[in-house]
Image (cartoon, rainbow, N blue to C red):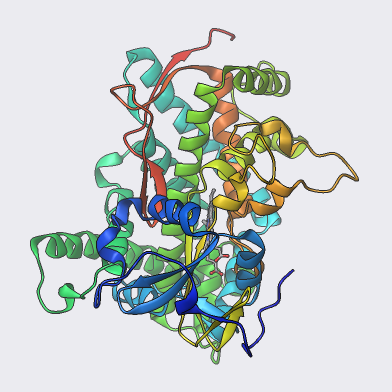
Length: 478
Ligand code: HEM
């Protein structure tokens, strides 16, 4: 594995191949922000797995080699950090938390977040998860009765927000049954605006507020009101029950207890920011991964049949999975999700910034240079395996003693190293619950765009399938 060492000799970044930049805007003019990852992937085909890029005036290397990416991701928080300008932008919308924190600040917050999402917390949360899943089934029942096509992303995002809010904040938001006052509708505005601002050559919103900025401010105000209300309610609960300070039941209580603890270094702003961080981090990622998985299952009948067979065998006459069902397995579901994340990673581009002089491969980088890590090319590289572009979930079959194959090692949908996604167990649990419930109770009539064309990838911080609709029919098994 290549090591990130200070540069001595080595190639200079300007010696790398790459698209030619404009003086101030760099390569941004040639990139549509909504399709940025696919454009960068096409250039990786043309220029190779390590090429130069200019993000405005900032020098960058685009890295598509999984071994180099893993080395960079592991060398955090000391060697590399998340993009500094992204930290400022996330702070501007009041969402500064574990995702954007660095150094000791990050270490402190990371400990709290990791604990809140650990397996014992997930187990305790199971009864509430079942209730949220039951509501999803009721929504799908209604869709099956009417025969209507339902917007898949909205349906799934309401589910994921309800689950994250239940687990991390201890509240039953129920956006599935009360969509009109759904916080989720306002949260959904945050990622697209952040993406637009990250890629803006000039920070116009700091000087003039366009109508779109004013509309965004209104959404943000609703989000902050809601979050502050949640924090106030949790504080009241904790004032009545002091044991919650010593043994917090969820992330929000843990953050409040840490905030009240003198010397914790956690500010009120960090508290609000982390609530927003987990709501945002847990929403689109899981919902979009489920969307892509369902689309792939719909287009691969043989895989779908195998998965339904497994689910039927586990659930029998039950309509929803129990905690024992989930603990025992759903291996076929896990394999389908892993494979879907390999082909359609919802975080296809991670942008990092070098804290000090370093190297990537044989290229010497100055402090402040950006590494734009392309997470997909290595995992779908036909030189690693001839069937790399095909949807073959069985490649993830666990064979004791057998080493991971080259594609599995190259696939890093949850990132890598010390900042690996802390929500991965929750995400997998949610995806098992949704897919088992859906495939056991319903036929997939269609999963696709309204005009029947292949769904296009769009990047708005996370990568989603544009205009994906689902139509289901009841399976008359019960
Ligand atoms: C399929 C679903 C998900 C995917 C694909 C995903 C992917 C990722 C990725 C790629 C990162 C960056 C990792 C890195 O920098 O190395 C990340 C970070 C993070 N994710 Fe997830 N995620 C998912 C679900 C969730 C859920 C459900 C939550 C919580 C409710 C969550 C919370 C976070 C947080 C807080 C971070 C920041 C961690 C840090 O910087 O220390 N994610 N996720």
